[in-house]
Image (tube, rainbow, N blue to C red; front, top):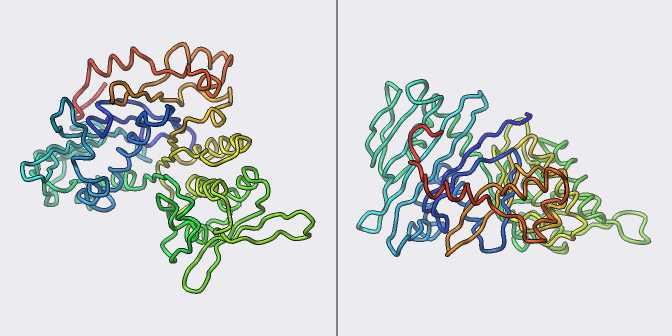
Length: 400
């Protein structure tokens, strides 16, 4: 796949703690900042797009506590929020998808403006919808739209817009929960791991059936991250299912077998991260995988193997991770281009590439990103932050 980057630029306005951000993503992007700086809110903006396309905009907002919890209040006034994603389709065509959501007086909400443009307006397929009314489109016929839903869902029935829908709906986001992964699970659809790992047994079972090579990669990395573990497989227990781990025990000729309920948080989280990264197969793969703090509950010595897994996975699937772990970033070979620094100032999240001093230090391999993080020297580029504030471009139309 090389350097194919499906989602190459993200603009968020008034999304949770983010006033405005305009950043470019790499095949592997590390969002780095202290706890509470707002890293998760950036990922959640992308996650909301995925949820609204796969379910409904209403359920995506409700899952997050409603519109009032999602949009940022500036100067005490509630505001609308907007998202713009610039993408490259597998065909090589480029385009953007953007929308603004605003409040209505009766506590409801509406999609104020929504547009999808492929290959530049007037050159390729496009549509623009304002408050539930179709304003313009390249297509001879367009499905009915309403102000409380994203029009791209309806437009996905048209072959022109289907690739955009498929790409954005196949983004996947993870904040893994070992407690949920430990419990007996009902058999579920396992083609895609769910956000907290609540169908991990089904996901492993699916890989056993359709992508044993991918499962082998997961098992190899798991053994490097948690050396005692020899392997893992899905195990049915009556009508339920769980995971069974094979583990070396001192003095025993054969590995012992343990169910998920007996495994540590670190082992379960490591498995979840690896399944999230390598679950793609010939029939289906996420376009982008976002993972919250993949290093949590892992021994620092496991960081090298985890970092190698992230790099390897990013050759097939775009990866975005949040982290504040110096151990995970302790590699002088990591490019400064893969980092976005996240800071919170006066309650507002700001995101930018690293400043020139950090980039130069990393380019010359004087310090790794991890060492700079330990020294509290991994800083955002102030000029870029100032430019973002000054420019604040419209989310719609063509952008430089």
